[in-house]
View 1 (cartoon, rainbow, N blue to C red):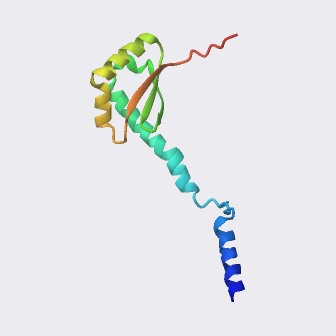
View 2 (view 1 turned 45 degrees about the vertical axis):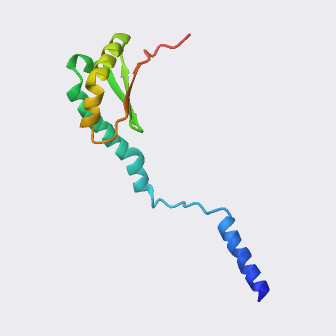
View 3 (view 1 turned 90 degrees about the vertical axis):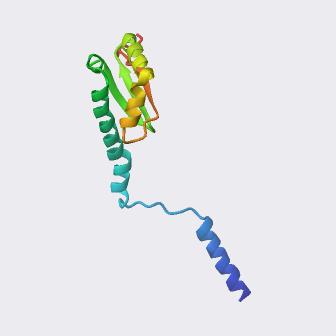
Length: 121
């Protein structure tokens, strides 16, 4: 009987400590697509709609929303003058307006100048 208990205990250890079998089915695919694709797309679309409402029209054509990840909205701008003007607007209350109007968590707006596409040759 003592041998049976030890054997049973060893089998349990193998089951608990051994490598787990990976789930190779596609059962969680809808949930994964929802989490990684659809939800971020909906969040960025909602933020883009607010962006069009709150940002002055003369700046809209010089800005492009690039990404919205972990509450950080990344905006690319055409030139440094636009960067300066948008930075002033964000600091004077535009970022606060975006935060309060946004249904999802918006922690900050990160601005950067877009690459012109020219390489160093």
